[in-house]
Image (cartoon, rainbow, N blue to C red; front, side, top):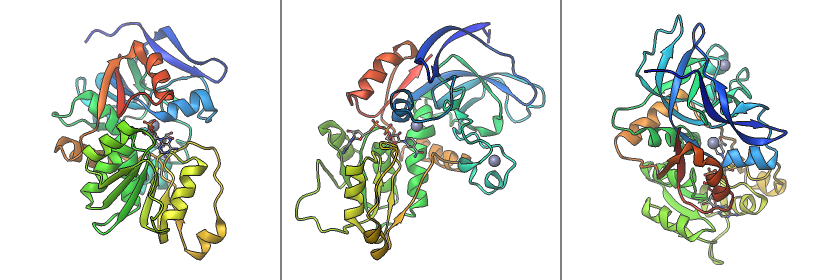
Length: 336
Ligand code: NAD
Ligand code: ZN
Ligand code: ZN
């Protein structure tokens, strides 16, 4: 594999937003590091929150946090990976040594906070990436193409982690608000747990896809006769006040609301209602290495089929605009 000296990529700065840089040096991996050739990288709605809405994830780095690639070079003291291995990045990039990382909670590693792949630290909107902690890579199954693998690292991993934490059972009645990149996969995963799934999405095509992926109902809004407290778990993949209010109203006593979306920087809770009905609000962040390995089992076996569309990385700015206008379904992945 011949490795160029420079490459192109999309760099985010707070001052200028996302800009194309055609002259980014391709570095050699140092001790314990490896160089990854990016095969595919997904576009997440979180990128919009960072670029246009002030979600603070650091300054001056190459964006792109859904990463699948091939090992192009390994530095000294890297024993676990070899040139040619197909791997995907576990975005939270845990340090590996702290109690969270040792306890299978590396997604909330305090040392790695803001040092996430493509969010604070360099990511995949480029051709080559230095991976500082190769422990945060997972092997991609041979039958999973790179585009699907990239989307699996967040658009599948994040709903999988949230659903695992909420401990769904076949008796669970679930509400999923927002069936886009993440939510459409949440439908499929919730169905693998045997849950009854109702989807709310404002877009016709997203509702049609949700039904295709096994949702029991997909609606623009809940019918007026719906009883308050109808759902055991409400996953909010939008998390603006209006959607959170729906989740709180329709969540069962002792039910769980998981506001996975980052749509509003702050939300207001009806505290009395929360207390009187003992509702839990569960934060959920991305996922762990174990979670991603389990996600790849589901994807490799065809149990979850992420809906992925592809384009060249040069076209990223076009698709940022399209995502802003909610003009496509599923996940866009780019090939540098
Ligand atoms: P997306 O744009 O692909 O999908 C959003 C979907 O929600 C679309 O289908 C849209 O039609 C629907 N929608 C928007 N507003 C709505 C409303 N008011 N009512 C009903 N439906 C509505 O977004 P995505 O990439 O799936 O990301 C979803 C959210 O999850 C984003 O806020 C993103 O930042 C967040 N996110 C969180 C984590 C985490 O770890 N907590 C990880 C990844 C993404
Ligand atoms: Zn994301
Ligand atoms: Zn750690």
